[in-house]
Length: 300
Image (cartoon, rainbow, N blue to C red; front, side, top):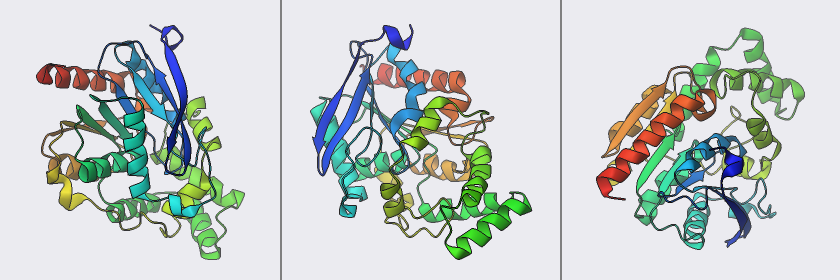
């Protein structure tokens, strides 16, 4: 069944700070819905579109978090906090009537899912945590090691531009792209869904919560985020996924899977940070099998 054959609904939900856009693919499907959380912060949902292939058996729901994509972009930096994004998630879930639901999060979206599970103790059918390690400080250290593996001319550009604060310079952006093509998405050329994500980015959200760039000083509100010591509080059935070349390094993802009380880890050998794009068919088979097994155990 192609995506064009599936019933699709979209609209807006009022959340703290404005309105967020959502889309339900497979709105008439009978299975337990899958709610998808994108990364960034501030990178809209478009790059998650391969997950819509799962809508043959269940509704798959996307939304653009406030500040990016098709959602409102208020000029109020006080809105860009993890607590407000957790509340936004809770409001979207309630507004769409998602009682029984699987929750998927990639990168920052997985951090959001973890914080939601810890803060709200929600009833969830399962968690799928894609390239979402539990510690920002460990993430930074891992990325520094991966950066050291870049060619010397690329490292020189990164070093000189960061020293001068020239984060918007095209040469600096070129150097960042060299890292992304190794550790974000190794598919060449990048698919349109990923290109649209970068085009729809909410830069203010990203800079406020993270900082001026992937490598520039992490000055944002996420700089001290770390839930490693609390993972044992989460008993929800979980699938942890990542890529062999991921900036979220497999050893760090293993810490996440081992810390959760009921989790399985799957590493995709030919992928970086977006395995659902880079190894689409294999990734979706793993997820569909996980969803089916989880529902069979729970009687959904």
